[in-house]
Image 1 (tube, rainbow, N blue to C red):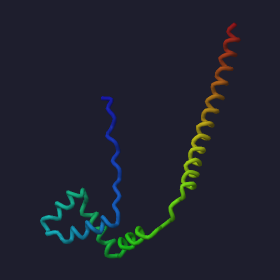
Image 2 (image 1 turned 60 degrees about the vertical axis):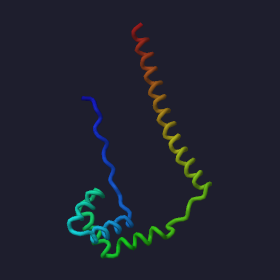
Image 3 (image 1 turned 180 degrees about the vertical axis):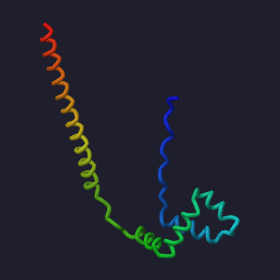
Image 4 (image 1 turned 120 degrees about the horizontal axis):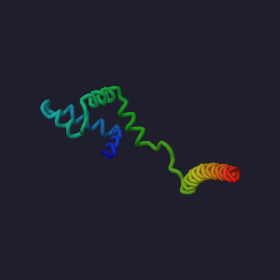
Length: 121
């Protein structure tokens, strides 16, 4: 009764190389083996249809070329460390603000209880 629901499945992403390989394999397969390829790869025919259209338009080849070229230079170790520390500072500042707010609420609650206690005397 109190069991957790099944975890939400993650959306799969496919590389342009994978798409090109599957479209080529699917197109080369005899008609009676195409379904087996789709089942093995857990794909739908619509995937192959979209990927074939993208391949024919030249979009997949362009993506493959982009991925092999250096898009951006690697961050240096100092830059990576700086970024990590910046994120840590941001996280700690949020935590500090949350703790200050909680402390303020505790102080007000304490003062209120003290006033109620004095009023009861």
